Image (cartoon, rainbow, N blue to C red):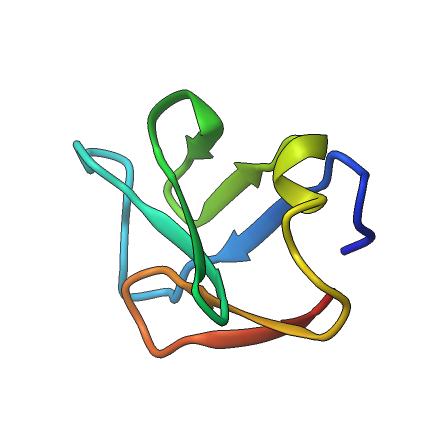
Length: 80
């Protein structure tokens, strides 16, 4: 991710999980004390994929380095 952009994060869902009928899906981005949780209109959910949209103002809150992404399974680390 590049700060100041409007990225879409695409999270692939494991084969044994189907989110088609999921009511509430949340994805949390974390770096130090900063936590941004996305849900509702900020994400699109299909059976095997979750697309998460982040605004320019949200990406500008992160510092250069690594952030954690939590989506129901162990955290994934991404470079900022």
